[in-house]
Structures are given as structure tokens and as C-alpha cells.
Amino acid sequence: LLDYCADRPDIAATVQSILNAALRGTDLTKQMLAYSRRQPLRPRLVELNGLADRTKKLLARTLGEGIMIDLRQSHEPCSIIVDEAQLEAAIVNIAINARDAMPNGGTITVSTQKLRFKPEDVMDRPGLAPGEHAVLQITDTGTGMPPEVMSRIFEPFFTTKETGKGSGLGLSMVYGFVKQSGGYIGVTSALEKGTTFELAFPASAERSEEHT
Image (tube, rainbow, N blue to C red):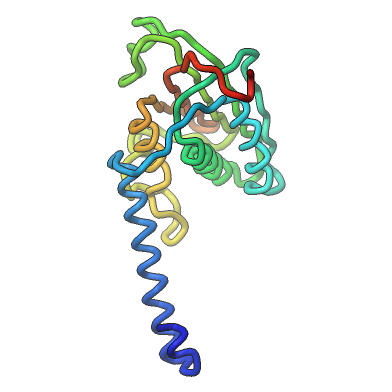
């Protein structure tokens, strides 16, 4: 239709608006599917250390100057079964929120480790089962969040950003993806003391080609 009315800019502008609205609707549908844990995933064996290293380079380009990326990798392989692209997108999403919480710049620390959780270790982590997990933590030096905000950050459409600067679906998408992948996500924060997101996925006994 756009091609058909190429010589009618007044009509073409209206058609473009319709197209943009349709594409936006597509994006919102994908985001809601992610939150409801119904998005199509392509899980495969992924080595978390390697993914974190690759994502660091992406974050450096995405977050811009003023944000330092500190990568701290586990000394042992951390293999998990997950959709690599979706996990990378989740890290970027969390990092962008961290950047917004550091308007004057700061540091985002991305760390990986393999941990074996005992029953007593998971009592304060609802949804996390005991056993061996690969754990990813993303910590910022930002403004932090009060308890009333922290308790709602995974709610769809909840946002503290100005109108037009956030849909409120970013972190709800991350939550849905992690849960759909059989993982755990938690957050700790305090005003003026930064925020830490913790993502844990069951460790795989298989070894990624990155470490074979």
C-alpha cells in the first residue's frame, strides 16, 4: 500500500502511521507473551561465562560513556540450557535500567558463578529449588529503590519513568523469560546503595563446545 501511494505523501503518511501502530502492536504482543511465559524459545547448551563476555562488548556499545562494565567470571564452566538470544536480551534490559538509575555515571558489575544451593539457602528465594545452579548477578551503583517500588518492578506496565520513556514491560519480560526457562530471578536494593539482580539457572552436566 505504501508503494501504491508513493506519489501521494499525504496518504502515505497515514499509511505509515497505520504500519507503525501495527508493528508496535506486534512488539507489545511479544512482550506480553514473554511475561505470560508463552513465547517460543530456542533453548540450547550455553556456557554462561562466554555469553557474559560477549554481552559485555554489546553493553559497552549500548550504554555509552560514563558507564563502566566490570566483568567477574567464574573460574569453572557454567553450562546451562537456555535461549541464548533471550538471555542476552535480558541482561541488556537489566543493564539499561541500571544505566537510567545512574544519571551521573557509575559501574555495572556482571558476575558469574556456579553454586550449590542447600534447602536452607533457598528459603529466602521463592521458586528456587535446591541443587547446582549457574548464577548471574548484575549489580549497579545507582540510586537504588525503596521497598514499595522494588516489590512491583516485575509487574506489567509498572514504571517509574516519565510518560513516553518506558512501557513498563521490560523487566516483566525478563521475569517471564527466566521463569519459562526454569530459572529464578530475584532483586535486592536500597536507596543510594545500588541494586543487584540475581538470575539462577539449573546447571547442565554437559560441557559447551567453548570448554571442550
